[in-house]
Length: 87
Image 1 (tube, rainbow, N blue to C red):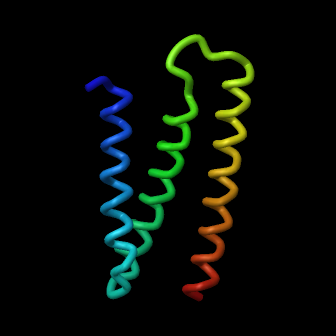
Image 2: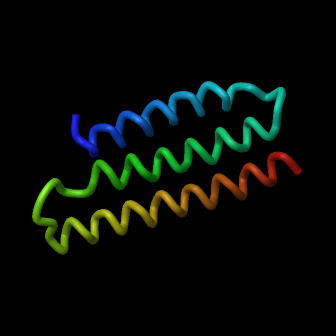
C-alpha cells in the first residue's frame, strides 16, 4: 500500500466514524466535532481523487482548484446552516 492509498483509507475511516457520531444528538460537542471531521474528510478525499498520479497539466490543476472551491463553499454554507439550526 502506498501513501496515497493510506491517506484514502484513513480519511474514509474517519468519515465513517464521524457519520456514526453525527447520529448522536445527546452531546453537542461530539456532534460539532463529527460534523467538522466529516467536512475535512470530504475535502481531503475530493483533492485526493482529483490530483493526477503523474505529470499534472494546467487542466488538472484547474479541476482541483475548482473542486476545492466547491467543497469550501459547501463547508461554509453547511456551517452557517448548523449555526442557525442550533441558535
